Amino acid sequence: MMKKLYILAVVLVVSLIPAVAQDVSRQESRKAKLQREIELLDQQLAQNASRSSALLSNLELLKKNIENRKALVKESDKEIRRYADSVYLKQLAINRLKARVDTLTSHYSRLVKSAYKNRDSRIWYMYILASDNLGQAYRRFGYFRNLSTRMKEEAVTIKAMQEELEVEKARLAQLKKNAEKVKAERVKELEKLRKDETASANTIAKLKKDRKKYEKELKAKKKEVEALNKEIQRIIAEATRPKSSAGSQTVQKDDPAAVALSAEFSSNKGKLPWPVNGSVVAKFGKQYHPVFKNLELPANNGLDITAPKGAQIKVVFNGTVKQVFVMPGYNQCVLVQHGKNYFTFYCKLGSVSVKAGDKVTTGQVLGTMETQSGNNQIHFELWKDSKPQNPEGWLR
Image: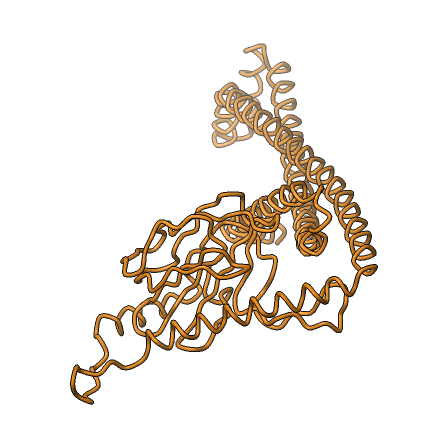
């Protein structure tokens, strides 16, 4: 019964190995992404360290960094638990293997003793001749004949299992070493998290001293956002307005290629590549001031993504560059149309490598990001007709 349960347990563990490996791979990928984002945010904070005017921007970066560090600590906790489980299971396997080796060694010792006691061939003959019948004599003869072979086989098996035991012990030692490394990293990350939280509290204290200044800046920001939204809406309305034939009121039918491209764009929801590898510091939708909670910020129709200085900005899908323009607070902007009714918008570019009318393909570089007011960020939006969409639901 116990043997059957053991076999069942082994089968179950083996069947779970692919799923566990896949989960480990996903976890490692999440950790790597968080570590990249944290490194990027730390660089941005270091660049802003000497700029007193970057307090609000720093607070946004710190809040995102705190969020990432908490997530990283959480991932480390999962990894530590996984290592603890692996160490436990590996120790069980070693214990079972050691018990098997001990049993075989004991059996081998008995064989050796038996061979030693019966080393004199005269004793063999007397033992065989003293048999009660022919069958017993044959069995005794077979026993002595096979004793040497069995001893050799047992010795080979014991040696192989002892070697396997040493390999398993080495694996166990490595698992423990890896677990200790993750624990040490977690301690360091918690210390950095405490420092970020302290820095965030100090920044909030400084910001609270000058509310009027930030209310004034907020009004200016609202005007910039409103101007940007109006310009985007104007361009989209013009691009989607039905065109009439010259000299008549006949409305032209939709271009089949444009309709097909829109359908293809829609079918790739959740699979589009990011315009830049970075960290989202401002999400889509209604926002409130991080310090003065009753102050509503301009609604964000897209995402603000911090990225390395001079990073290349890439188009997320095939399309046509509809317009390149400049807006206060947003620098150079590129609007790309994807078929009949989908549009993506890329802003805060320092240099632009495309022009209106250009056909672009997924991943093609539109330009490079420029540091603006001490921030290395791009503003990205995605629209369907005249309605802004949450880009995070579209990007992979």
